[in-house]
Image (cartoon, rainbow, N blue to C red; front, side, top):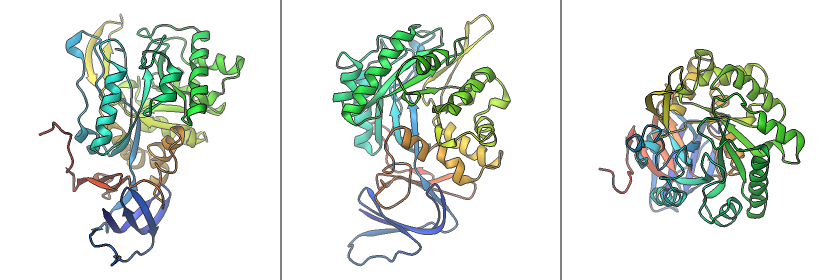
Length: 388
């Protein structure tokens, strides 16, 4: 399969101007000003991207592939995610995880879903664990999951949340150490992806571990850090200390309008924080419980993968960020956190053929994943096995 995309304005995510991109198989073979249709290829598809933008495929590191929820009973469990919903969001690489429910949801099922989506054309990874410690695993231990299961790149846990298991600092330190060593031995990130709730402790336990143990700050990636202004200020300090944070693009996580995802990221940019240490993710397909002042659940929303694409448009069109900067939070920054750069997050020779063609309004026109056309002119061409 050979594809030649011509005359598009390329953001790699750095601005490169008008360039042609040659994809051979699942890899980008060449990016340069002009590439002729090579006669050595018997079948080559030429795509005219004149007047459009070509950018890396989005990487979403927090998606509930097999569903989430359950906080108001078994009928409130969100269903499995269909391939087409991921493609429509411009996501070409996805990391799956469990949420509140690590009992009726299983890591084995998440692994199977990840393998299935890979078969259907996406690049997939996953975290072992859920909200609790001890972590739910496949092999019986977090380190063995990371070491021996191809898809597993780290572990998820929840802190500062009434739904968590309220682990101790010693337990979280031990979990981080297991993940770190297993990551080293298997050449994986071995990261601890930390769900942060609205609890009073915020990031204090992580900061205490970093200050009083040998675990480096980069071992932890706290997410949902814009829930409150106080938490966000602490998260910004976490970045200044050398840490990395993940901002959820689903706006229901924010308590005030000034913490809208695009506004929060622009605040970081204006304050001169190292933007390479900031990523965004959707919490796609997870349940979003809504609580009243007494802590009672009064409503339930569902995270949408499209939230990250909307974040990009808002950051550029409303907050005035340059597109080359805005793209980094969904592409290269995430690829580096997941240790999959430059195969992912970049448009250059040798990178995977994951790219999006956008119109001038930044709407998604066409999606390529691993060199395969998944969507064209807004219509999904490759659907999941059981989708209509």
